[in-house]
Structures are given as C-alpha cells and as structure tokens.
Length: 534
Ligand code: 16G
Ligand code: ZN
Image (cartoon, rainbow, N blue to C red; front, side, top):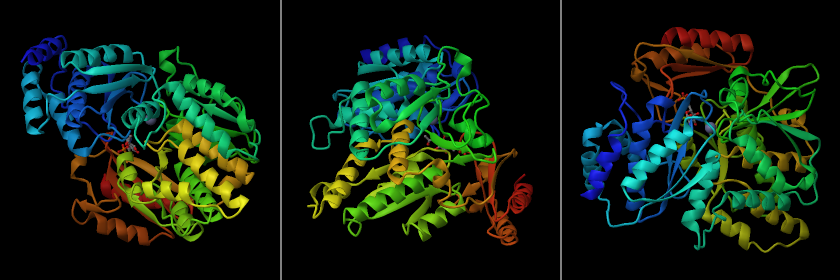
C-alpha cells in the first residue's frame, strides 16, 4: 500500500499531454521529447513488474530515438537475454502509458494481479541513454518510478543501444554455463577486441575505414573501442561526425538512415574514390557501408549486402571446418530486401532464405529457428544468432587437419565477435572488416558479388492507414479487398517486377516498395501501385 502511495505521489509531479494516445510500437515509444515524461514513468513501473515476473532477472530500459531528429526521444524495454520486450507486454506498456496519473497506482496494482506477478520477488533494472539533451531529464523521471516501486537499479549513463542489450544479457547469464561476458562497458570492448584479434590471425585489413557516427553516442564509444582494438589486424579507423556537444548535430545530414534513404554520402564526407566508408545511426544499432566508384558514382552496401557477406563467410568456414552438413544456416530478410540479394542467397550461396514482417523482433525470432540465423533489414539493422546445437558442434568437433582446426577456431571467435543479443553496428562493423580482410576484398569486389535490381521506396499519405493490412511477411495486402489483385496485375507487366504496400509502423503513411529489371520499369511500377493506394 505504501508503494501505491509512493507511485501516486511521484506520478503527480508530471503532467500528461492532453488528448495524446501512446502506443508501444515496433521501436518502443517514440515522439517529441517534451511529451515523454509520463510515458517514461510508466515504462519504469513496467520494467519493475517485468523483472519481478521473471523472478528478479535484470530488465533493460534504453532511452533513445535512434535515427530520429534531435528533438525526439523514446524508450524501449530489453528482455533478459538482451532481446526486445515480449509482444504481450507491449500491450501492458501501452495500457500503463495511457493511464490517467490520478489512477496510475491502481492500474499498476491491477496489472500486477492480472499478469500474476509475485510482488514479493526482487526487481532489478539497468538503464542507459543516448546523447540527446532531453535524456538527463528523462533519466530523472525513470529514477522516480524505480525509486517509488523500490526497484534495484544501475544507471549505465551513455551507451549505445546494443551495449545496453549486451549488459542485460551478461547480467542474467553471469555464473551460468551461458555466461555472455563481463557486464561492463569495458567488458564489452574487450570481448569484441579479443574475438576480433582471434579471427584476424594471419590476415590484414587493407586500407582505412572511415566511420560516420551520426554525431551520436556511437562516436565516443567507437573511440573507446579503437583504444582497446589497438590497431589489431592493421585496422585503421577514421572517426567522423562524432560531435556530441552540439545537440542539433545528431543525425543531421549524416548517419546510416540519411545515407540509406538519400542514397548518398553525408555532404561533409571527404572520402576519395574507392575509400571504404561506413555510417552508424544515432544509437549505433544500424550500419551501412558505401564508397564512390571510379566514375564518381555513390555505391551503397546496405543490410542486404552485410547479410550476404556474413552468410557466405560463415558458410565457407563451416565447410572448411567439415561441419556444414550438421549446421543449418538460414538467412532472414524482409520484403524490403532487394530481390537480387535473395536470388544470390538461394542460387549462389545455396542457403534457405525467408521473409518476415518488418521489425527486428520478427527477424530475430525467425533466426532462432536455425542453427545459424543470419538476419538483416535492408536499412542495416541485423546480426547473426547461433543455436545451442551450433555452439556444441563448433566447440566439440575434433579437427582432423590444421586447416580444419583454424576454421573451427575462427567460427568460435565469430560467435563471440557477433552481438547475438541484437543488431550492433560496432560489432557488425568488425565482422565486415574481418570478412573483407579474409577475402582480400575492397568494397568494389564486395559490391561485385551480385547486381541490385533498381528499386524505389515511396511514402503515400492516406486518410486512414489502418485499413491497410498485410499477410505475415508484409508482401500481400489482405485489406482493402481486391487491391492486391490489382497490384499483382501491374507486377506482371514489368520484367522482374515486384511491389508491395504496407502501413508504416512509425509514421502516418503507407510505404510502397517497387523493383524491376530497369530503373524506368521500377519507377513506372511504383507509380502504378502508388496510384492504387493513394
Ligand atoms: C522500426 C524497427 C525497424 C524497422 C522500422 C520500420 C526495431 C528496433 N526497429 O524502426 O526494424 O525497419 O521500424 O519502420 O524493430 P516503418 O514501419 O515506418 O516502415
Ligand atoms: Zn537505431
């Protein structure tokens, strides 16, 4: 009862924005930062409940709005294994966030009953934030909620989103056979650096890598990582766009989202022809590579490219290690993946590939069904997961030759280099560097593995986007009735034509993707489908 009083008292310090309905979406809650106080408070309450429900396991709270503009902010919860919050709990988060402050303590109590939380259990929460100016105020609110509900917590200050996911997983596996690492920022860097050095044995990185950090938290963290890497394997990283002092610089004219959606390098880029470049997003969970070719044309190497590169290398190592028959390797994509990448995976890599709905949690979930699940969204968010079975095979196979031994060791080191909890731009970057070094490839050879189909992505403003409902993998509109048939008819009119429309989960628009054999055809297909939707 005194907790209820404490909740009420703390909650009433804040004001709920009038008439606003909050929803825990694909990326948690995200909006203009000045609207977030009561939402963060609700998330703090829920984090404690989630931890109690899971017998006191550590739950993470990350305060970030990723690639969104500097004046936005957001919050998401991290489950014990470093995964996104379980789907059913998104509904509870939404419920608490919309509860009137006067009755939030009752809603909290009711919810605890409804989901049968043993309130006698301990509750433990770790949290961190990106570099946004609003972050410190929001941390204050989170603090108030956790204190009112007597939750044990640790403030990890500034972190990348994947670093916090890493911490959560480490905390919950400490002292078990699944120990993931030292639950500290330094532990994170050391894990990456140690495994990087192992896989780099005998090879050297060619040329330097310029990394655009979106003027976000990835900048200072990458600098820390570089110290620990200590130029291992000859890796020479030039850090650019790492201004975290000027609050408006974040994600402005730079970063992975800018590069992917604008299909160009940040205007500030000084990279020369064939220079290897990469961009992180504002919280460093997305990564894309790019370069300018001899004709001065911008060339993007997006999430599809990272997926194919990773899958091909892991497949190659598995073969060399003599375990490819025992490991089922799969590649998970979304419908936004370029058709040429899916064809390459099927026909050249000869690996199974499947589409899931957009949103990392869907891909991650599907990836876990394979021994090795490689998943990336085209926008650069992704990672590789290894099943328990895969880990056993990699650890326990007796090598019959030095080459096989080395392949097994490399695979084992890769399982440590890769942040299996969540897509992690810093870890993915080291993975790409390792593979390019092993293959002796410049970004040009990497790009040469297959040719992307020309594609378009358009936003269509509609009256009510909620009427646009899609099948499980986003590719088929089940509502409005009849629309899909019309889209199908158009697709058939273009060579290699493929198009789909889905309601955005983050913006009030319907997105239309189209690809075809030529740019002209892709544009025409897009025009036709956009016309049907809008
Ligand atoms: C969110 C998702 C991202 C997805 C994007 C799609 C997470 C952490 N993030 O940002 O994976 O690509 O939404 O946005 O799941 P859309 O629904 O507006 O197309
Ligand atoms: Zn992000």
